[in-house]
Length: 55
Image (cartoon, rainbow, N blue to C red; front, side):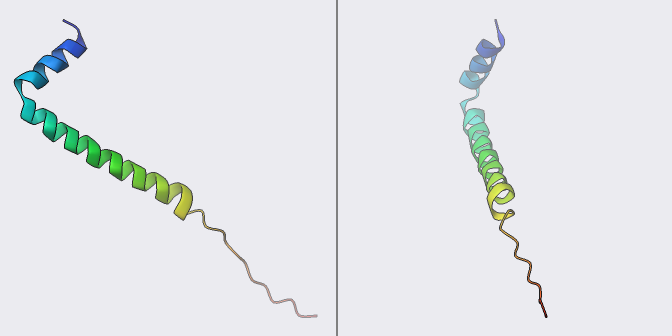
């Protein structure tokens, strides 16, 4: 029996764990997606530096 068959057998024996694991994976993916958006889009807003040029 290979690993995939063992996983399938376990989930067939304990279907409640599959639902719980699925919800945890959904939450984890949501957190990773939000972290990616914040890191790559929100945090890289343009910075404007103002200087006073007095001649």
